[in-house]
Image 1: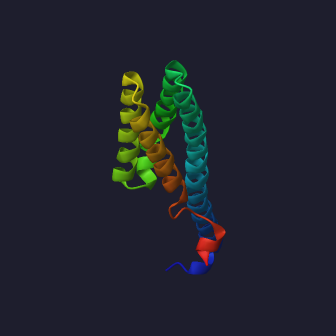
Image 2 (image 1 turned 60 degrees about the vertical axis):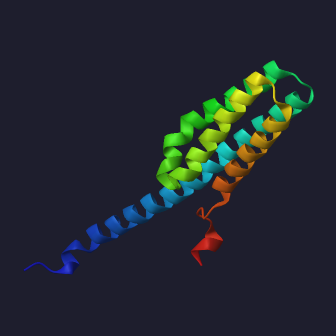
Image 3 (image 1 turned 135 degrees about the vertical axis):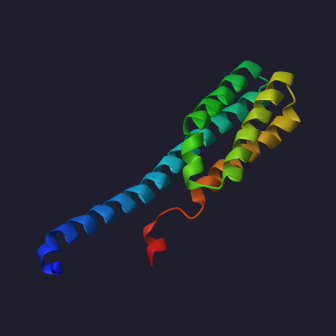
Length: 134
């Protein structure tokens, strides 16, 4: 019969590896979503400025950048967050892209604020921070 003393080093290595993987997973999600939220918010502000100036081509280009950034991270977001929240962001981006093509300034401002709000919400919900540990 083998004893635990023979596997002491292997147990320590396995425990350390598990801790590193879990910390990496929590930290990755926080950083990844934070970066995505900041980029989307930056493009939303630019699009709002363009809509105020009725520069529809530039507003559409900024919305396409938002869509491109979201599409690059949409599947990864679904690993960490509720699918409904991620789908709601996708729907708002699609709505804003449609509204900018028909040039509806009042409606597009609502849609842009919703995009900003959802992106900020996703970045802020129960992500890994050191105060959350205790």
